[in-house]
Image (cartoon, rainbow, N blue to C red; front, side, top):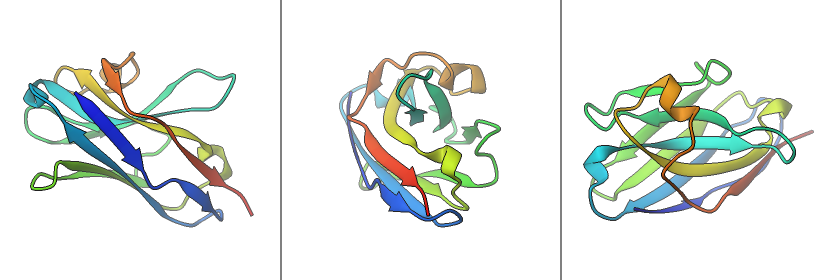
Length: 124
């Protein structure tokens, strides 16, 4: 499984940003695809993912209602739409693949695959 993320940048508090993750490889139907983020010196935090079975999304409580993960199946791209961004959302965001259905517990675990990170900075 290969994952290529893009779309990070600097945004003001309250602003929006969309990250993209191009997904390729075999056996993708067995993986929940989503995102986690990490601040240097802190633990990884799962953001959310799309279920490998029905495509439903699960999110961490910290982003629920503000972030949306969705997929363009024709292009094999998974998006992370972020709204009402806060300074505490500042982190390196990684597109990732977890083997399994896609649950809150799963996104808190170490993914099987990840792409390169993209920096998101929320600051005035």
